[in-house]
Image (cartoon, rainbow, N blue to C red):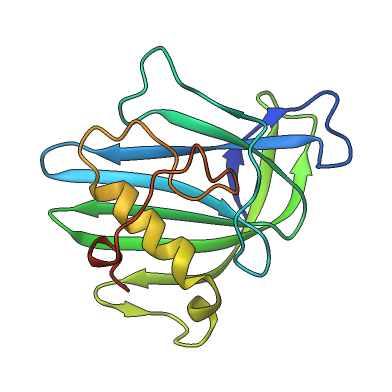
Length: 162
């Protein structure tokens, strides 16, 4: 069974893809979540827009154009007990409202272990960014984008492998 994630239909960005997904997330006192987007090789993607005003805390921060086979990393924690899903986009449902991307699970981290020990290593930096964003109290910045001026800089001590 494929999972679905809401996305935004982009106009004028046909060379980058016709859909966009928000990098979003942050933490409250005891729990947090994050959505990070990367290429099939784990590299950062350039955003269409980066929000800099309005309600930003634990919200949508950067709109990333996506296409089939791009990777979506969803991290959730409660008192730093993590569930992390690494999925690839397998298609789009253009008839759904809102527009949706269909996700195929690649690997999952739960109860302290990965479902596949080899697959997650390719996306290690993006996974570390998802964990850091999910732990960032009232996060207001993007963590994993290809625009160096806007990206929230991670310090080595903040980046921990799952």
